[in-house]
Amino acid sequence: MGLIVPVVAFLFAIEMISTSALNKLKMKRAYIGGYELDVLYVLLAIVLFLLGGGALSIDSVIGL
Image (cartoon, rainbow, N blue to C red; front, side):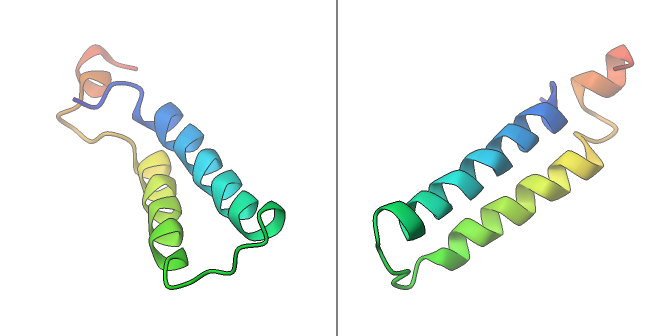
């Protein structure tokens, strides 16, 4: 739907960075074939943050 996509994407990127750091630093777990998905999610959230919801989103329709 595209409502407040940049805000949610920014918060999701922060969440993924913090959970990845928690996994690595606090829990002393080595990345065992799973950090690629975390990095992909962070990069996709950053792209959504920068580009927004698009022309057909609710934000675009109501002018936010």
